[in-house]
Image (cartoon, rainbow, N blue to C red):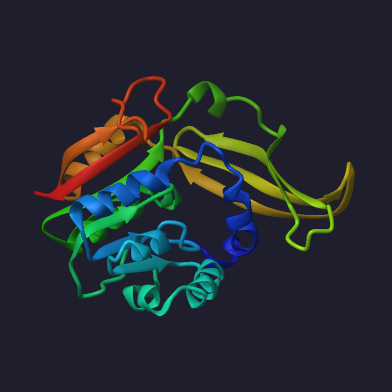
Length: 261
């Protein structure tokens, strides 16, 4: 988890995901916050896409991220919030595999796949154990990862796909287009690698281009269950989508609600 690798992601994060229509996890995590109450700990909080709405609901929330670039965006956004929201938010830079805050939380969330930026079993286990160590008695830990489609993982290397497009902020009619190129998939270590390409376009003419490498761990269901058990956690809920359908072969997600054993 190297901070510099998130520089471009932080620059474009909010604009990109504001136009992503299938990004439906926020209401799920806000529902958990309403159900279990605060204080809430968000690990891998990024630019505050989940953190700030939780605080707006009147709950104290701590947001942790390793990326200075992401947290700089969050702090700028936080300055624009009312004073009562600002008072409810604590922002901490740190590695959530090892960071000890000295506090316990009714709800710990790891939304939108930060667990997939843990690339070894040792790191994955450390992340879950450390997250669980911050729970109150009876507190809930929730996280999500994608349910892999292995036919896609084993094909399409080098192919460029347009994922998202949004207008540049200055209103000059230019657009930014984000493309994804899959570099490869390591079936032994279960790591998908690729790169995001950000192109500033005027019509079909490309004015500039920037790229950022990207890796994600791939999890199987038995792999996750073994990690959860080894971390001293028990499953109290598992879902294959954010509308709480069961996990199945075609489910887009694997979502878990956990308690300390």
